Amino acid sequence: MCDFLPDNISEEQDNSLTFGNEDSLRYGGAQGICDDEEEEEEEEEEEEDEEDEEEKRRAAERERKKEEVRKRLMEASRAKKAKKGFLTPERKKKLRKLLMEKAAEDLKQQQMLREQERQRILQERIIPLPDLDSMDDDEMQETAQKFVERIKQLESDVYDLNYFVRQKDFEINELTIAVNDLRGKFVKPTLKKVSKTDNKFDKLKKKETAKVDFRSNLKTVESNKFAMEEEKEKEKLEWAK
Image (tube, one colour):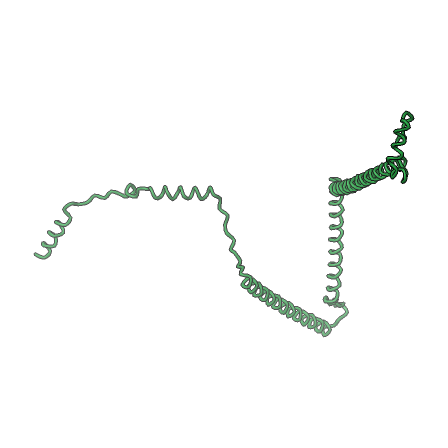
């Protein structure tokens, strides 16, 4: 704020102020100067207020972002903990038990369906045995002939099925060989597992056998020093005869 002039100013000073500063008084004088200063102060205060508001807004924005990041981290940690703690040992045990019960139930159901299918096929293929007591000889021979024909047909079907299975096995083997040739993979033979200690013992045995002195095992035979001379004498004697 601007302060007005004091009361102890003399008249001359007042006149000099009024007449010397005619231009300033023409446009308002001291009051105009004070008004300008007040306007400048107000503008500065407004600028400071705007800067303070901008700083507060930036600080609030930073806090908001920090809060969002904090919430995200907390949610991620909660989700991670919930995921880890979902399968507790008790739940695992219960789940394993339920899976075993479900597998046993499915196995029983499959066995039941297979048995039903087996019974149905047997009923279709097996010829019911007629009442032989009420048949005469001709009817019994005819029935026996039907059974013989049925057995022949079944044996033929079995032979055809076995031949079909052998053919399919051969085709599968040929296709497997072709695939391995195309891939460049060959069936490796199964190797016998040998421990390292056995190899060491084998090497030691080989070294021991190499150091064996065979001369010590040879038998000593008495040699006759005069064997050649005796043979010559015998030859001469035989020739002389």
